[in-house]
Image (tube, rainbow over all chains, first blue to last red; front, side, top):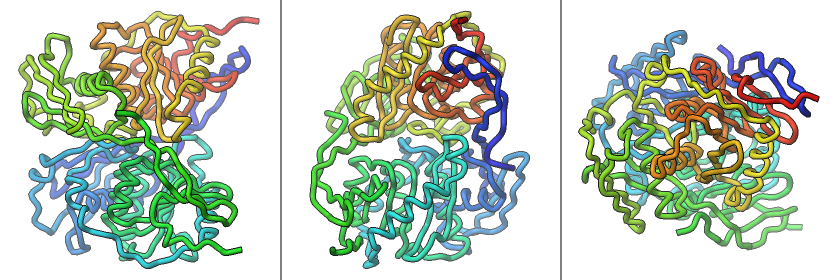
Length: 266
Length: 266
């Protein structure tokens, strides 16, 4: 499985039509089965078996279906069929989860949030006394944007990266930016990496659901080269998350939480 | 209600931090009640009461909940609360619709598709003998991208426009590109405009769900300045939809259906 495919297209350029090869990004349906019951289908970028597993786990974490490693039993992937079977050890009422409150978000990748968003987060402030140099943040944003291969090839993919004060820990791309974030969350879950002092860098727009996914894992700093929405800014303020947009070149906009950003004094 | 809001931010530029005003795009939760029962919450751009109505109707059309005008009874909007109440005259089993097959898409704006996508469309080829000049298409793409006000201000909004061989008929912007398309579909429904010979121009990426929404309304030509996914290209081929990406400057990529594009012979 790979993320892009070469196809034959016709291009019109300055009034002349000609056949040529073009590279398009794949969109892959992954159906999650929980305890042998069909749960949901995600449309995502296929890249590796491991990443599909991270995606499914991250999605379940974001939806509050699993909390700790012991909640998850056997995981089996049938790549050709696009199925992932996950055995859950925790007793959850799937029907209850499925039929609960649903919000269709604006975001790429994860439309359905089963939680009642603001209610469940309202009281849970992000702690994180961590401090990040603004130059480190800009460097990460620049390097990650350069690194984002799929995006450059096909113009249709977003990335998310989990970083610390020194380096990039995890990096994922997906046609859905929420998928990319769920892959990060799933990988951190699998590798038991704590997110409470990390920084999340993404290429995508910071809609409320991105912030909420980050907040649920207590990620204290969220950075994008794109714009946040006003609702995201409000959530960041409520939960005291450092929210940075338009991190490009030598500038960034801090929408909340500049206390976690160290500016070199000249 | 307006689509953007001015807020106070801190900007770091070349190592200097300063407070400044910034404009951010709004994200507005609109909860749809069908026959007094809560159905779903969409996160969208607020702009006008009329547009919220178009969005809700377009969403219900895309989800197959309503087909004809007589299916819809009274529509009441409570803007402050973010509620829209729609009375349906057709007998549909809401629970059945809610609990049916669900796919979480990659797209911005509409995550949940209750239909089993390809099955339901597989046999329904788009007819449309319509022919569009490639220069008209490029002109539309260029003008609409210039016109897109919210996007330019805040960097976080996509547009969809419905056009004919002469002009732009409907134009909508939203933080969710699927919302923008549902607004188009809802407006066409309300004004009883047939979509079968029209052209859809959008700023957003052409993921499978955008094509499927267009296909359900038999729109024969879909154009974007962004990239399609491979699944979109396959659907366009299956249903014989003209799919054009990267319509920028003096060029465009035709992924399928160049027969509906007239190239001036030199």
